[in-house]
Length: 302
Image 1 (tube, rainbow, N blue to C red):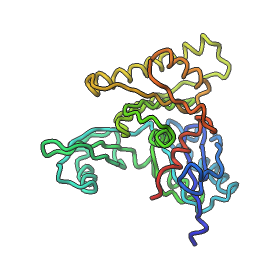
Image 2: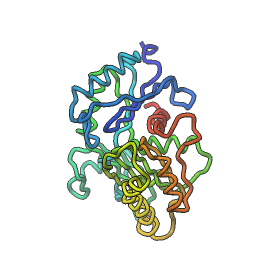
Image 3: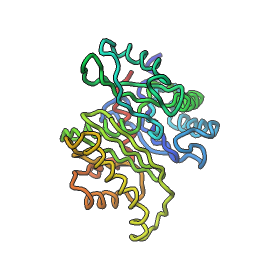
């Protein structure tokens, strides 16, 4: 009976917590409840599910507590192993045909750092009988492990999304400025993901593992800790301008999100380093920590 499944669960996966939101619809006004729950250390490492039994029990507790049994679930996956490539395919192919064709070329003309991927594509422009295509590839085994665990806990996994795309969706739906060249800086306590969004499409991503940090760092120690990461952010900004767009465009918007303890300080340092507007959702009712799962909740039903 469909009324038993009214509403949907949205969960963003990180190495240390699950962030969740329950929505009665995929609109900003549909939020019913939200929060996060810690995951025992070692359950997830570098975005990969290591201890499936422990993870399933954590989710099972959420399902039981919130009465989510058999609810549809949308998942924001960690971005650490996503591969983004721009490739060319015959222009005569439809989108479905293009995906099938690309699968046949993996390991032949298209090389990925993992086997058995799940893929999605964005068709770009056509030139001289060729379609330019953005290819997004993700390890299927990694996704399947999470889907199995959520199913075992009583949820109905319906769709998966990248965390970066969920965050950008929230930004795009809530901000009036239509910036075409965006660098998304998603900084969690143990990881940093840098994603370039061009014309509302992710065209580049870089994932960096972040070392553990104390909750009571002195100013000098904090500067030493974040300096290398800030240098990498600036390098990516230059890389986009001079390598990807050959000097034609430059990043004109930074989006800063995540659960990093010193995110406010990072914004201040970025402001001093580059003359680019920074959005960190500080005026939003819910803090930047939850932007990933709130953006996931805006993903259309499938």
